[in-house]
Image (cartoon, rainbow, N blue to C red; front, top):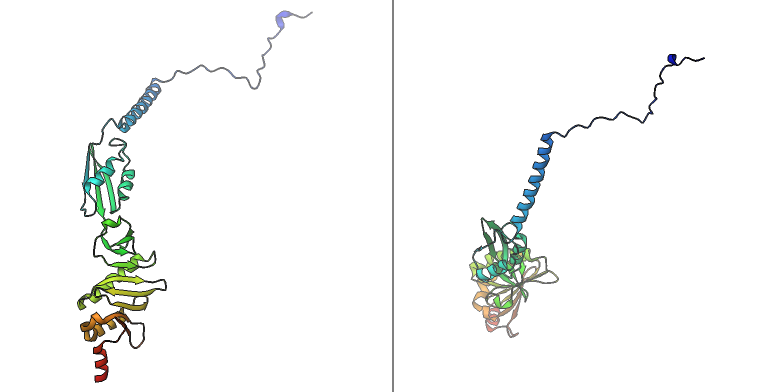
Length: 269
């Protein structure tokens, strides 16, 4: 007969996955304060951004134009700027305005900046034309081709013709030629580089000079010596001079006939 008093209590086996429940810890007051502060800062930043970008707040009231202009006007630039203002002081798109002003026919460079608290400053530089480029364009002193309306072309400009992409070199050559002929009271009014790279110069006395392939400074100097000592007094008889010969040059006379002074010079020789 078993005795109930001698029985030992059984131990309850816990499963491996079972764990004792931990008492919940209270959230520190400092963490709550930090969270509230972060939310407050985010709200302020959002509100501030919306306020600053609202065109009704800090509207632009003043547009100043700086630069010297001969072929466009400050009023035209100002109208272009104001037509592209779509925001307030902070939200206005400066790049958009700069592109719009830069697309005006005679404008070369543009810089736009904000002036606190309600202004824009536009600094613009106008193209300085050196010559006509072909029939429908101009080339600047910096060698840049641009196409303003033909009625705005300045009168009396020389004319350059050559392959596209070679305008910088052609401008450089034109300046070298003009510097070389200036002492002889000549002015180049046309410089042509043909498809075969042949170089032709037309002077203000209507004489056409052929130098051959590429610009040749020595051939030009040879022509100037002959011009000064022999041809200058009879320039009205000369149509064209071809310097492509090794030991001389060829002259085409106006009217096709050799002038009398040449025939007399040959007979006297």
